[in-house]
Length: 136
Length: 136
Length: 136
Image (cartoon, rainbow over all chains, first blue to last red):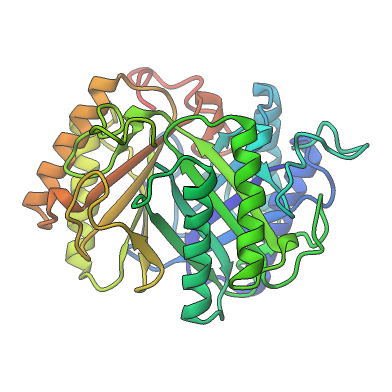
């Protein structure tokens, strides 16, 4: 399972943040082999001067709607899986809450199954229950 | 040495946060091969809507006391070492500040010794002083 | 390309934070094989009790000016490259905004080229444009 740390400038409505959360999660379920109830996200709202980003480096042009999504996962995915996720994500976020694809940046960090304890001090990703075996 | 990024909902007392910090640190020293003065932690308090977590995925039931501890370390540990740490952590946090084991999630990310500069622009984990050689 | 998550105690001036950002970026460009417009940074200002650090572990003595810089990169660098970066960073920060080298800690996490989508749902680090091929 992954968890996401989402950084953006402060000032968006609760409904905007909720749509961002929902559609990130939807893209993960649709394309990134993430189970339907596996949602863990941190939204970090920043003041001007706290979020610094180049407007045109390898993409953009980026606006003040820029969002940096840092995803930490519990096992490797194929390159094609990652690419399908990036494509689905920007399509979903463009639809709702209306973030331009130019403004979406994603960074994935991969760790191992035994580096996760989901709850109760156990290593659920090492010995997942039936039906969750492939999902981390 | 590791550093920890601790995310939880805002509203806990300073004493609660201090006990959380102390017992995370104590569990690391007791079980994770961390030296006695090696404590680096960031506590990220979030507002409702900024911390999103599934209440029952692979554990729980999680409450509003949910805490996500992201640990970055400077060298690999054995699976058994990680498991001992998870178990010690939830036991300690249950005792003080009184966090239910169901509410504790941990994610470890492992980097290399030369990826740390503890101070002064040096790579202390590459050439540690006598007595600290095994601890990162 | 890397992005940086910079954690420090709240209370510094905007000019101080700007100088910190500029000189971190300058050190990356000068020593870490980072292109001239590749700047992505998050500054996380924390209240007392939210940033916990040992004053003397493997360095210091650390003061309330302590800054923890967590850098995530898109490809490995040589140890000598990392060491040149650490050295250049503390020299620059000492000059402006005047942070003592003892107060600077850096942790690097390395991910792969296909784990980055800089914009528009594409994997720019996999197929970089001419002239940016070596820079991630």
